[in-house]
Amino acid sequence: MVQLEKIEGGERCNGCSRSLDGLPSNLVKEDVCLDCHRWEQNPNWKGILDHNHSFFHYNDFIKDYLARYKYRGDYALSQAFSHTIKLYLAKRKYDLIIPIPLSDERLYERGFNQSTALLEKAEVRPSNMLTRSHSEKQSKKTRSERLKQEQVFRLKGNGVKDKNILLFDDIYTTGTTLRQAAKLLKESGAAEVSSLTLARG
Image (spheres, rainbow, N blue to C red):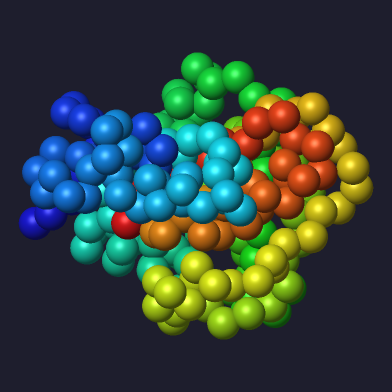
């Protein structure tokens, strides 16, 4: 049975952590994957997200695990990744760690924010400085729909100026959600915005 697969060894994309090993050469541009290359070619998004680090490949095992955790309310599952998260963050320098928020409607539906819970289980105090307007679930959208999505985040307060910020979410798929949040933070004066995710889809 397939278990958690760490992204380790070999070449990784310098932008999003995707494993470059085995990718066709037309999907790699120098030290980044084609997806990250396209983001950086777009003047609206160039330099918005400095880097993403993901721990695991998004395989069937972690897909099922996160579905049980997020959609079936198995909150106890958040404990499983606490050691991995804690170890990584101990080596990182950042001023604020901000979990990607759910909309009020989604939070009511689910009962908890999976990203906030993962951080709290790792004994990390998140800065809940972002709010999110309600939209269709990301998992229901096609890649092109995600890329065209309008800004869904709002910033609470003004405590991000000149700060080094780490965004946190469960999955990096197209990078749209994280870049939207990073764009808002950069426009609000953040010095640097990177991200940490459990899995790279």
